[in-house]
Image (tube, rainbow, N blue to C red; front, side, top):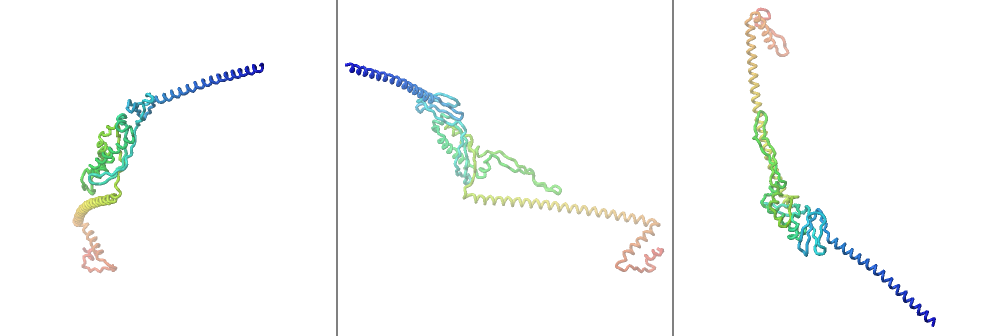
Length: 350
């Protein structure tokens, strides 16, 4: 009986131990579950908070949509808030964008084919209209810009000749102006004075921009500028154009050669005329000097023969001159008769 009582008491204590152990284990689980619940609440709050914050950068527009409809547009940088899980955010670029158009063929008014390669600088001007008309897609905007610019380029070039297209590319044209006609002054040919003037003309970009005429505004975008990178000819037309250019340059060279030959002839004729005039003047002066010398000679002779004292001396000198002139060749012997005037001079009988 005592044994059975002790065994029953042991069983009661064992069961009580197990019962206390179970109570302690349930308390820990409650604390752990409470911690998990708090963590989940924090995670939900963090997700909700993150989904409520909208960060807008300097180069962005943010469109806040509610069930697909745009509620507002955020255009200033900074932090803003939206209703989480109800409102969504679309990003639209707020910066200058570059779109490189593919090269395309256009035909000028004189039926010449040219290849135009250009690029466009554009930006979103009205983000709401941009989202409504182009779904806020840059790719859609580039396709629309491609069509607008190509049509404007085609219409512009189709109204211009090929030479006009090339000249108007940079909006400037150099013109050589002749101020005077060629003239001969003295021995020099005064050529026409040429001055080169740079005339401002409407550039190809300005022509294309006028053709666009704000058609891009209906899409909420602004085309800032259209620049032509390259104007070229199709490969099958280049050789013909080069041949024509060579022919034109040869014609220009022939014209310059002819003008140079004409100017050289004018200079030559002017020089010959001046030389003839100078020779004639020199001959006239020489004849005048000779006449003056002869007059002076005759005056001296007249004075000499008018004086009896000088007459004998000049007669003697002239006799010597005549004798000298008569002695020619190697034979220097002169035979004079007594009645010769020269012999009489030498004999003192003259």
